[in-house]
Length: 98
Image (cartoon, rainbow, N blue to C red):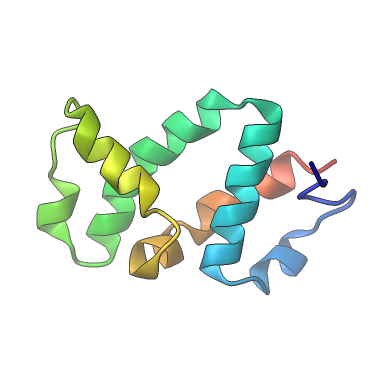
């Protein structure tokens, strides 16, 4: 698998990527590293991202309903929620640059 975050990746370089590209790179890196912690952190960050976009009802879903979490997880790289999660993806990618 290709290295998704090149040596010396900088926050400025990542800031130029689309939200979808950030999501995809962070997910690819987490998969390469078998980083379940990142995936769990993403699941916990999605409700706040949804609330930040004004989707309060969406943000109020119950964290104990796994299907809801999985549905949110599969769409975390799309739309306004992906945009709200940009800092989360950039922090992960810069913190784990190879």
